[in-house]
Length: 473
Image (cartoon, rainbow, N blue to C red):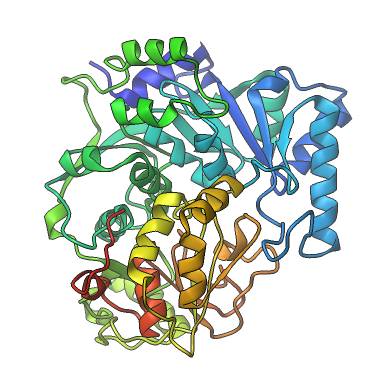
């Protein structure tokens, strides 16, 4: 009589600390150079060591430059962060994928592709989009710096269990509708705080039909409606994905995972505190118009009228329209863009690049648009180049970056959009200043970004599908 979330928490609870908190064992912990320095400093000040170094992984991804090969970084401050991070990892015997490591990339891309995200585990990281690992039936969540220190020292966390919510997406999406579109539609309806205090399990025909990359996009984006955890029951697709990964499970371990799959799902009589249902066939390609991921509409839609909002919501909506320089009632299709960016932990996997290339083949980026792509990892880059995807991007006018990292997802490096620059972006957040002070971000699927780059404005990717392209990821 338990949900998948409740089973994972129960399996990893070391002790009940109170009626509201438990001590939770963390199977695996991921760190980056930006959110870990104070945690290591705390360890040093207390004279503590990392208890289980093999249960941790360091990844450089936030502040490094993606413009040039080798250990190039954006500035001296970034260089110092990376050097200190590497020194801390070496001091404590923690494996680290730095900028000169062939396995380097964005942490939430690297961990799955290396085979380190597995069903039935708990994964913590000092980054909110750790929910990505829910695609594997793993409980992943972001933690703060003091909690990073606690995990390093004890491999445990003081944890307050969440309420379980289920979001069921029935039916099948139409042409051009990707996992990103499904999630933007869900977030737009439930709101940016619609899952606050909940762990969300995604279910239904449309979710089961997604490949693992699409499921990662779904779980990654769940944070944008306030979820602290997101889960999809693992199945054979997950086991197939894990097979032959560099640091993945052995055949014996895979068999054990296969035997355990019936356990890692919600019981038929499991009780959810809240349930929502959606139809995938009602969803069109989506795009954000405002400064929050829930401010999104179909590409055939319009910027809302202020009267469409509840009175308490109107000030935020008006501020978003002013910041984004969009007028109420304006069709979103046709809004001109200045930049197009494909990247981030949400949509920079090989599957994302393939659907973008399907749109771009034989076409050119509009003359007024600067476009670039940053692969989610060096493994993704090498695979894309082996498939010739880089040649299609370059021929279309996209800049093909040699290095991997968060890049312009959060403008914490040398990829920053200028004041008033409008960006079509495959990232996860469109907050004010997220991609640069005064930058205006429209988030959408990678295929939609490719279409916008070609048109020079927000455009319906289905127009390209009708002319021989494809967008299905």
